[in-house]
Image (cartoon, rainbow, N blue to C red):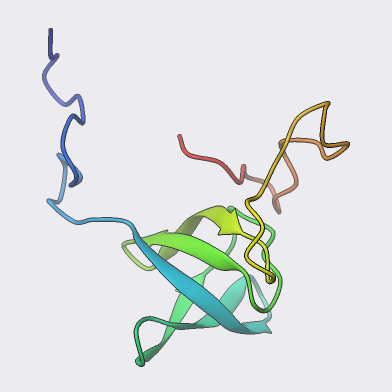
Length: 97
Protein backbone atom coordinates (compact mmCIF):
# COMPACT_ATOMS: atom_id res chain seq x y z
CA UNK A 1 0.00 0.00 0.00
CA UNK A 2 1.39 3.39 -0.96
CA UNK A 3 1.43 6.17 1.57
CA UNK A 4 1.12 9.82 0.53
CA UNK A 5 4.60 11.12 -0.27
CA UNK A 6 6.00 7.60 -0.68
CA UNK A 7 8.32 7.28 -3.72
CA UNK A 8 7.36 4.30 -5.85
CA UNK A 9 8.43 5.24 -9.38
CA UNK A 10 11.58 6.39 -11.09
CA UNK A 11 11.13 10.03 -10.14
CA UNK A 12 11.05 12.07 -6.95
CA UNK A 13 7.49 12.50 -5.68
CA UNK A 14 8.40 15.98 -4.40
CA UNK A 15 9.86 17.57 -7.52
CA UNK A 16 9.42 14.92 -10.26
CA UNK A 17 13.18 14.96 -10.82
CA UNK A 18 15.40 11.90 -11.19
CA UNK A 19 18.77 11.20 -9.61
CA UNK A 20 21.24 10.86 -12.46
CA UNK A 21 24.60 9.07 -12.51
CA UNK A 22 27.49 11.41 -13.36
CA UNK A 23 31.29 11.14 -13.24
CA UNK A 24 33.39 13.28 -10.89
CA UNK A 25 35.94 15.22 -12.96
CA UNK A 26 37.39 17.56 -10.33
CA UNK A 27 36.94 18.11 -6.58
CA UNK A 28 36.75 21.69 -5.32
CA UNK A 29 36.46 23.22 -1.88
CA UNK A 30 34.28 23.54 0.02
CA UNK A 31 32.26 20.41 -0.73
CA UNK A 32 31.85 21.07 -4.45
CA UNK A 33 32.78 19.07 -7.53
CA UNK A 34 32.75 19.42 -11.29
CA UNK A 35 30.99 16.44 -12.85
CA UNK A 36 30.52 15.17 -16.39
CA UNK A 37 26.82 14.81 -17.04
CA UNK A 38 26.90 13.23 -20.49
CA UNK A 39 29.34 15.66 -22.06
CA UNK A 40 28.14 18.69 -20.09
CA UNK A 41 30.26 19.83 -17.12
CA UNK A 42 28.29 20.94 -14.09
CA UNK A 43 29.11 22.05 -10.56
CA UNK A 44 27.38 20.04 -7.81
CA UNK A 45 27.52 19.76 -4.04
CA UNK A 46 29.29 16.70 -2.61
CA UNK A 47 28.64 17.59 1.03
CA UNK A 48 26.72 14.34 1.68
CA UNK A 49 29.22 11.93 0.12
CA UNK A 50 32.97 11.35 0.00
CA UNK A 51 33.80 10.95 -3.71
CA UNK A 52 37.10 10.77 -5.52
CA UNK A 53 37.91 11.88 -9.07
CA UNK A 54 36.64 9.22 -11.48
CA UNK A 55 33.83 8.03 -9.20
CA UNK A 56 30.26 7.78 -10.45
CA UNK A 57 27.82 9.53 -8.13
CA UNK A 58 24.05 9.91 -8.18
CA UNK A 59 23.02 13.57 -8.33
CA UNK A 60 19.57 14.91 -7.48
CA UNK A 61 18.84 18.65 -7.57
CA UNK A 62 22.58 19.51 -7.86
CA UNK A 63 23.36 17.42 -4.73
CA UNK A 64 25.39 14.20 -4.90
CA UNK A 65 23.44 11.73 -2.80
CA UNK A 66 25.39 8.49 -3.27
CA UNK A 67 28.64 7.09 -4.63
CA UNK A 68 27.61 4.35 -7.06
CA UNK A 69 31.00 3.16 -8.31
CA UNK A 70 34.58 4.01 -7.50
CA UNK A 71 36.90 5.28 -10.27
CA UNK A 72 37.65 1.87 -11.76
CA UNK A 73 34.00 0.95 -12.08
CA UNK A 74 33.88 -1.19 -8.94
CA UNK A 75 30.63 -0.92 -6.98
CA UNK A 76 30.86 1.02 -3.74
CA UNK A 77 30.59 -1.37 -0.83
CA UNK A 78 30.07 -0.49 2.80
CA UNK A 79 29.64 -2.37 6.00
CA UNK A 80 31.68 -4.75 8.11
CA UNK A 81 32.46 -7.22 5.32
CA UNK A 82 34.16 -4.53 3.23
CA UNK A 83 36.18 -3.00 6.04
CA UNK A 84 34.68 0.37 5.12
CA UNK A 85 32.24 2.09 7.43
CA UNK A 86 28.94 3.08 5.86
CA UNK A 87 29.18 6.69 6.98
CA UNK A 88 32.23 8.22 5.36
CA UNK A 89 30.72 11.49 4.25
CA UNK A 90 31.51 14.97 5.37
CA UNK A 91 28.75 15.20 7.95
CA UNK A 92 26.31 13.14 5.93
CA UNK A 93 25.87 9.67 4.55
CA UNK A 94 26.91 8.23 1.24
CA UNK A 95 24.08 5.84 0.57
CA UNK A 96 20.49 6.16 -0.56
CA UNK A 97 18.14 7.61 2.02
